[in-house]
Length: 189
Image 1: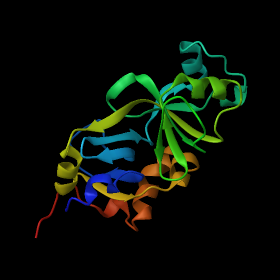
Image 2 (image 1 turned 180 degrees about the horizontal axis):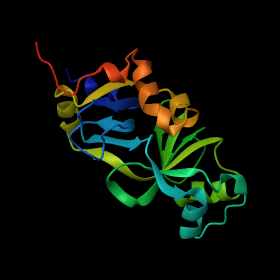
Image 3 (image 1 turned 90 degrees about the horizontal axis):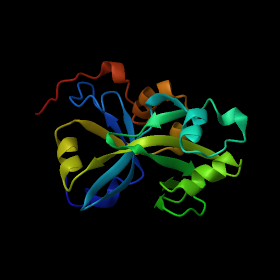
């Protein structure tokens, strides 16, 4: 892989290959929000926690007025800063601390977005996670080189419209692959 990979993986999915050794990522789809020479940051989008919006909003002392949101799951975003909330959302909007990804998706870590959601004024489409996935310089490129991940351009519909338990096979389908046909062993010619 050439140096052109550096920023190329922002707004892409990483799909864990069968046999992923790291249990944090086995069977996951990770949305990459940032990727440059300093490393990468992403959010696991297919691992709901035993925590819902109602409990989270109570925990952070923010009223949740649209009660229909109370049962929506909060997701495990990754093993880094698991006590912090991160919101993947569309449209981007204007929030205190947002990473802009592509033309339409934002990743916000400031509380103002959750306060807006609590008021019924939040973004139309959102996924709330605790924690994120992070890689140091060159680490993600190395893992991809060792066949730990497949990559594909992100499709916001997979994050916001597909049920969580269908996101892993749906990500493979973006590549035209049936995950049940893949072996966990890496092959090198």
